[in-house]
Length: 449
Image (cartoon, rainbow, N blue to C red; front, side, top):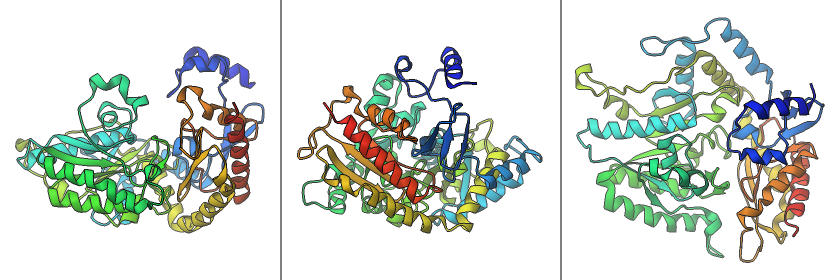
């Protein structure tokens, strides 16, 4: 089969996600036949470094032998069983391991299928907790400006990226929005920490005034990924945890994209020294292999639902594939690699290489910011560096970077005008430097008038 053959067939039958399909009249689809390590390969032997981890999910490369072996073993023992009234060894083992590696106090695991589903479950849990506590008036949620938490209606309501949300606004619940601590907006000479503390004042005021009607605050710790890889200082979440405790409000940490080493620590919350009331995990949980998500929560939350059936306090929420044994086996293999291969320490070396590889862009006239947390690095293209005036979004300059990258054995898929690296952890320093060179070339092409 040739590339064009599969593309032609696919365009007749497949509606692709996050895509204006008319684009593919001029922007060809890229058909992938196989993957190995950081590489993706099409049907004509062209290869691309997967610099975005196939939408931030792949941690240890494509066709990882250790994960493949875990799947093969599990699939011959048990492919799936209902988790209501039944249990199985992979889900018990995974739950025990997750409790070991996540912040102290998260002692119960509730499984779902994907990141949005985890957010939905956490929202329902928080509201239902307060209802069980005799406080049904607590039914509002707080988000941050420029946040993103998924595409199902509850998760979408918690987002604040207009591109995804505005069309569906009539379908969505109303939420309260506090200003983001996004360090891109700090004053000249102001530190990231000082700006985060200044931005927290508005959150403090909101909680003080409306805590009696608020169930929870939902945040993406350290990186607002779909919001353009905007980043902030961990002190914000330290202060937020203190305020949530003070005002009796839950804290939901959406670590779906930033967990499992993406920010330099196993979980982003570690850098703030906090334990949220709910931690939502997915994406890297299965290293890019299978859809699986989990909401970890505390004994306090769990115990509020533990009662006789007739009280109707139970959390009657379910998904058909909850706790799928194959997905759990993959997640266990993923955590085993973290445990055995010194991943976080090795990532520090790779992170330093990423920073060094793009340092030359710091003075580029069309680069407004270079920012990084661990294994996530972003370069923001702007029309004018001094004023940080953005390029009009309609010009789609990032698409030019994407198109160039495909000619240079790389998959870079910018978010608007933000070029970013979020590669699998098996990437080499030479491959990182190649990505930096390709990004530099792509940016130079993209900013030409």
